[in-house]
Length: 315
Ligand SMILES: Nc1nc2c(ncn2[C@@H]2O[C@H](COP(=O)(O)OP(=O)(O)OP(=O)(O)O)[C@@H](O)[C@H]2O)c(=O)[nH]1
Ligand SMILES: [Mg+2]
Image (spheres, rainbow, N blue to C red):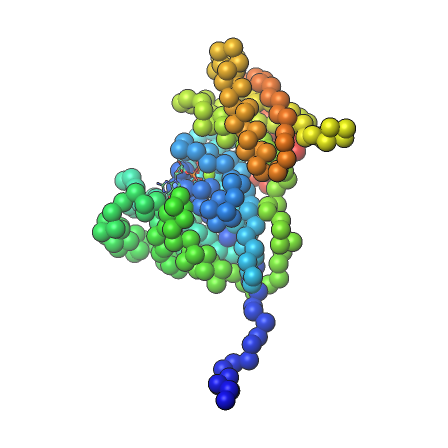
């Protein structure tokens, strides 16, 4: 006897696709979340605020969906041209996204959303999911009052506690944003990882080590450009040359370090990440150059890959 008579016939699964923006204050864990969802280290992360400066896409393909995740620079009140470009970048991502995941860390003082953030959320035309991140850092009972406080502040589609670091709650979050994507086919081949070119990520992996290893204000004055990205046909090895740009001679000295120790350390750590990313051995050569006040000059910013429209660093 068959019990299938009352069941619906098996339909081809409905395929959904679209853009999911990840936005929030600096250090909320947006890039960590992007990497955790993709299961790979794509977006650079650090304990320091303002690590991400560009729009970065990560393509997440499932059996019946393709979500293009878009990591963004943390929301702040811009104080100089670089920060202004960063905020324009985030705003332009929000204009194009189908769904917004607003990330808020549960640690720290901020339990109310700043007016500027509320205005930005209200200007977004699609649904907004609130992801409360870093729940691994608080006791469970502390979560409920926080949710109660925050839920009346905006018309959230859903509030989902997560830990990007421990990969907690990510399935629930994924299901939530996938359900909100429009019906549509894959926008990229299933094995594509990003819209950005490989060279962009190589430059970012060098900058990641600069951000992680240098002290205080220095990382903010640092940019990385790729000068050469070539394969030697005889040895079949990959050679990469990059320039670390700083604003002052004194900063150049710090990046290089005593007897070149710091630049060596930066280079060898960046090389490991780049090799893991490319899946091949790499020879990495780093130079350090001084470009005065590049963070304050729109032309220099664009040359270093910081513009709200196109963010790749090919040059
Ligand atoms: N304990 C804990 N730490 C986290 C979690 N998610 C991220 N972090 C840490 O928070 C710090 C900032 O993470 P990022 O992913 O770089 O934050 P971001 O929001 O991308 O920051 P910006 O790019 O500066 O805007 C890093 O030290 C992460 O390891 C989490 O779920 N739990
Ligand atoms: Mg980031």
